Picture 1 (tube, rainbow, N blue to C red):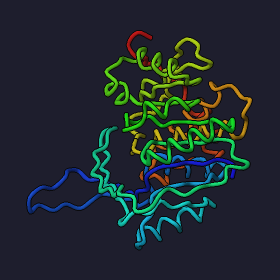
Picture 2 (cartoon, rainbow, N blue to C red; picture 1 turned 90 degrees about the vertical axis):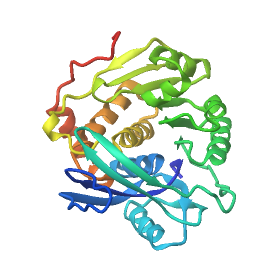
Picture 3 (cartoon, helix red, strand yellow; picture 1 turned 90 degrees about the horizontal axis):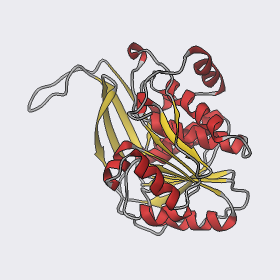
Picture 4 (cartoon, one colour; picture 1 turned 135 degrees about the vertical axis):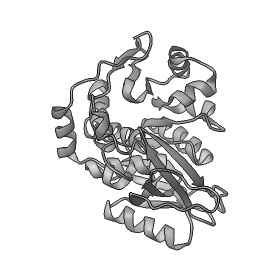
Length: 303
């Protein structure tokens, strides 16, 4: 096991349409994609596409959607460790104008305890908090074993405060800041106070606010992607997480600015494609994005 990712599994149905029908109305989508979904799940696939396939502890049902997901994971050589649920979860996603509307159909009623795994050889843990007891258990175990721990803080979840006591790298969202009731600097200071060595807030076209080694806040600009090339932003953040974990695994002694720059290029590639699978970058895609796009001049207020 090179790395372990833990999160909720979805099958994503992403579609482009001019409008969402209501009542008895109907419409025809202009395009659609069906792929794997879920925060840490998509991150795991991104890491695998870049060259290092992690193990994945995720929710799984005994139905045809789960079998389809297993086929997807096998294609990327990702070993699956199941936390059983009754039904597979689905997301219906409608990207439009750089945003996306989402309807989630989620089963997180776990039928059995999470599996006990051997962490020998594991170098990184990435969690999204969607399987809270497993997230906490493995964050503690990895901290004790000296394994790098990473959190996707897309939202504040039921045991996020406790989990953060065992996290080395936390990359969080604006929603996370809002839920804490803190601003950007307040949130980053909160992460420092929790012992998080590398903390970041992703801000879309405004780039990333971050620190490392408990140092001062820095700004990494986004890449300047023309608006007409932005097709689907869903999953771009998950790709960012998977890419920086890959960068760490490929070069554990490397600088976190370089890790985040690779992740930035991965996300810049992702937003130009429809659906999670077609959005995944390989090494050539990373190099192309880094060479093709300059840094944006947009900055968060105060930076």
